[in-house]
Image (cartoon, rainbow, N blue to C red):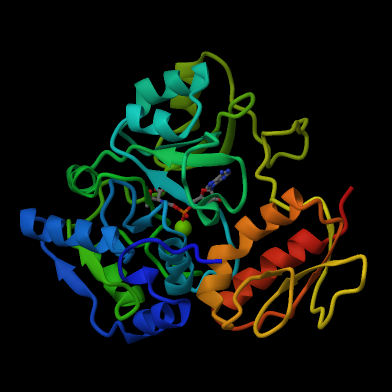
Amino acid sequence: MHLLTLGYRSTPAHQQKRHVIMIRETAILASNATGLRAAAGILQAGGLVAFPTETVYGLGADARNDAAVAAIYAAKGRPSFNPLIVHLPDVNAVAQYCEMPQVAQKLAAAFWPGALTLVLPLRADAGISTLVTAGLQTLAVRVPDHALAMKLLTAFGGPIAAPSANPSGRISPTTAAHVADGLSGKIEAIVDGGPCAVGLESTIVDCTGAPALLRAGGVSAEAIEACLGYVLQHPSDPTTPKSPGQLLSHYAPKGSLRLNATHADAHETWLGFGAVDADLNLSSSGDLTEVAANLFKMLHQLDAMGATHIAVSPIPDTGLGKAINDRLKRAAAPRN
Ligand code: TXA
Ligand code: MG
């Protein structure tokens, strides 16, 4: 199954991996038209570009390109697939990818562009990589309040997925030098736009149900509550009644998973890895970037196939393999 569509990342998976490994120098791009053109070109080709926003520097990739999004996780060394925030130039662009409940329209009108991320129902035809949403049917979106970020979004002309541009476990970068410190040699370029004004990540509000505060950040909860005229739900508070759609739940297929399987029993569907004769293969060449790009798509495919018992080949627990195994373990955990 060939899922990779753009630029040099549309070459076979093992060559993409080589490409990523062969990045030796991260270009520092100036915040002028030439720099932005180069940055947009790298994104279009499936590469990674760190860029400033008013909150922190983001590590950007084309949100529609599985392999580019997988490369974000590899560059950050993230041990798990948390869903990513997608950056867009305005509310009309957001409406192309997400449903906009009334409460979201109200918050968007009051706080965008700005340090507020909204979690919204994802449109079925959005074309966003399943690796961005970690298989969820919701999408976190933000319109950044930063002239350079806005110019990059316009020059690129598509959705940019971007977590904070730091290696996993390190603090979020607020200057280009911080980014270079952590990710030099691992990403194609950094657009230097000077220090970030807010210096704190965006506030995240889930608007798929009664609005709930998922992360405190650059816009205060009080300001949001003043706009809404009522208080936000706090799903992390154990006394708050939990209702579906308010919590970040993890995607798991309907069937049960048996991990580290070296064969499939008669009643099982085999999700393979490497040179095995499986029903679906995450990467027959054994490439972890390809596994990451295929993971959520194939879990959904297993649902579509009606798989009730799924045997999963062992995946090496190195590099991207850590995040892949983390997600497989969650999917295999007993459910209630
Ligand atoms: O200020 C910011 O938000 C920065 C700049 C670059 O925009 N980005 C940022 O991204 O902080 P990151 O990946 O470090 O944090 C994203 C957070 C994660 O904690 C993730 O769990 C949450 O957003 N998130 C993303 N999609 C979600 C979804 N569909 N439902 C719930 N939470 C989501
Ligand atoms: Mg972060």
